[in-house]
Image (cartoon, rainbow, N blue to C red; front, top):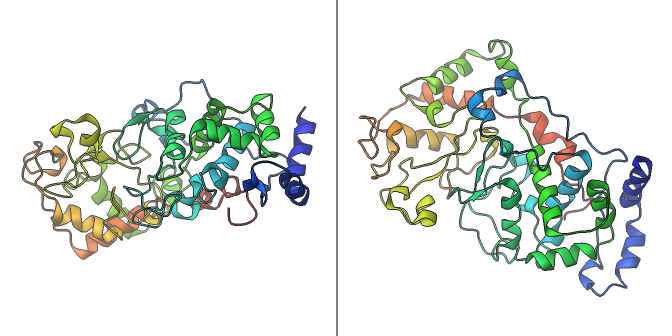
Length: 377
């Protein structure tokens, strides 16, 4: 069976011309210019991930979005990778998941707001999806639990990709390279929304970042850090700045939605728009800082273009919103007087230097996470 599947992958990579001729005879004229993904004869290894020791903390493990019902497999994640980068998943075949989650940008978008399939802007900045396996709530407002549920929502969003699930299934059934990929992943070529969801979730769940300079240092007492980076880490971890009290664990994130004092009044109330509770207004998911040097612009609305602007906000720009998180207040009470850190330029530069140690060069250049389509797709 494995030998047969490998031969199928070779065919997928080599017979684009045949596919073109075949697609011209189909009723779905959108496949006339069909581009085939180029995949390795032997699938990349997605299933065998050995996390370093410093990832084994109880708080982090407790957040893993994985109950064993959809384990990552090499063939399943391969299918998920193709789906993730395929513009055929949008109504007018212009936009893929990868259009707004760029590998070179740490799988975020370099724009303040992303453009959906019709060219209109999305409501919020593209979410951070690396290490998504370590969270069980998704989107800036934490409105969805379960990665299998999350991955289908942008596809169905009228602004983002504009497809219904029945339309999506019908379209994928009409594309010749999908039945072999579904058969490799699930044992037979049938295509349905559940399998699409599971494959996409497997691919996203396989996007694990743990090979940064910080991770190397965690195993060696940070002997690889410069004096400036050590200073920045000390500041980040100090009880005064509170940075590591919101960006916790080896993933530097929090599962909760928090108010960090961006505004006194919010045009977008974040979590509050979902719950309807005033106590949730201005609360947004605390994203992972993994690859943060690559993921500008920052915050839910992309208001900050640089890390220095972000640090300036926490230094002296926090607003006293009624729901301001207690860790950002002088009194340690929700909505209290904001702390004023007044970082020096030396301190700001040191914190930024430390944040750069979280860049995972191996992960953002790994071909198994790259766009498999040979032309812009």
